[in-house]
Image (tube, rainbow, N blue to C red):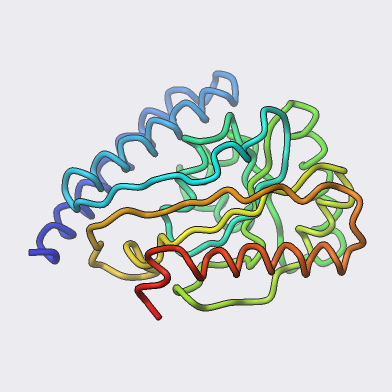
Length: 239
């Protein structure tokens, strides 16, 4: 039954995504904020499909740690779901993402129109300078920044080194960093066809104030995210 429900969801998800891409093409001449409107609608529709077809819902903890103005949200990354939820919880977030995503036909064009912070991971110092310049523009527009500091999706319980880009943003922008823990990989895992019913927990932890030394900041960020991710309901069930 879970396999069948997942099949129906996957077909519905790709159909819904194609519909949103077509809608986005018509909105390309308009403000970049129109792309965020499409993104929110896409995310909201996907969450509804998950709830109705799979029986997968979500809940938020620590919502009081979401700030009113610009901030950096550094999140654990376990699932495609993680890339959708921030569009519903934050106002016009600027995602830090690998530049290859912008090369996907049609979808990449729409993604670029939303003004993300693209990173060319093979370009070294030039990529870092470009990332910081994009981040400056996002903050000037009053937008929050979302970054997945491990750089890729991980399985529940897995930990990868945190990339230095998050420290560069922290030091350059002088903004608070809000660590985010979640357990989405238990229900919508990386490259897993079957989606599991349940409730994903996303937790916004107390912010790390600006001013820490680079090494101390990286250690504190990893400590908070990994410790909290390890005690979420879905993670605990994995161990």
